[in-house]
Length: 316
Length: 186
Image 1: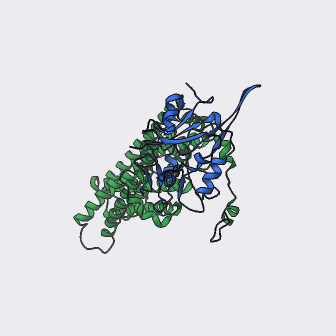
Image 2: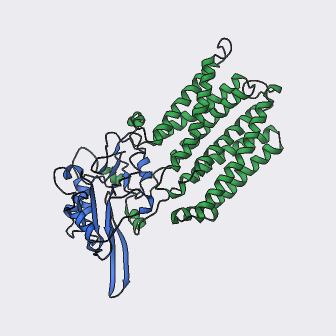
Image 3: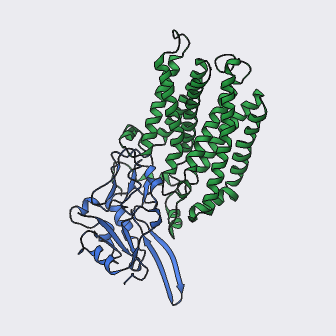
């Protein structure tokens, strides 16, 4: 069966989620701890860059790229509101980063602090939006659950906190300025976020799979079986549960070794991407008798032949 | 008020595919797009009581169409008469509507970059003609008309026959009705 949304959309959901989470975590750090502005500016810039790259991938995936500005027309489309949140968080994150650039006079202005707050709130919205977008599709039974946005949001926050924890805990220089007692509160907050989010991701996924596997919908049951004991099982159990969640949880709970924290951050990022890919590729919908056979007869891989019919000359 | 619907009598369909061909030619569809496939349900029963079933499909023009509100560019819209259609001039090819459709009745051609779907041949219909697939079906398997007109062919068929709709559990209130395998006479 031809898949409507493929790898580029999976990468977009991942980059949007991680970018939004970086901005959200940066904003929380900015208002609750004594992290230097340069450090927050670096993490905000990373968040904006991730989102911008995600937007580029999405743009590349569109069938009619020049019509992309029309995406803000509708008031009912989740994609439109995701775009609004993306634009808002990127603009405010970039404004905050610019205000904290080296050479800018004096302390951080009030408008930049407000921009960080808006970027953080909108970033959290982007995080949640990547899951809400899928959960709102009533045609795809496996996605129809609040567990999907919860898992996506928690996974992105986990990955962002792990990345910032590794960066701030790095013994050489951290991100922007040397670590000191000033950053202890930030490190504690980030570690607590990592330790709290991993069980949330795991619990939401397990509860979701349990509900789907025992539900009435045959399509959702078959997808859940794919996750639990089918082709997705190695990726889910080994890739997400053990390597992506349990090992980083142990690293954050037990160790303060910078190398371990860096490895945990890399693994958390990989886990977040893997989660989005597995969920996105669980887009099965109920098929009608004979539909699979019919779809197989449609041309795939015959692009040269198909395009040979195009052109100014009428051949069809 | 007009509310268009289609009634399909599966017992009349022989799977010839003329409706698909008429749609393809009339709407100048790209070669990789089929808006109204006819699914082959296979042979059922035991000789001599055997039956080869076919299911002619098209967009269901759901009253609560999930493909319309999810369109960020407002390219997907639904008219007051229930016809769901795509404005190709506005479609940016994000494929959200394809994901939203429970029936797989939307597709995007690699050569065009915008989404195609059945629109009940709305330009013909508003000139008093029938959709091409209905007009072409020599078996009379597809019937089109106004559900709000009690004298229309679709209203009379639904009043006199048992009918069901596909994937009703999704809750989109589809407007294509299927008479059961034997014609569904009450």
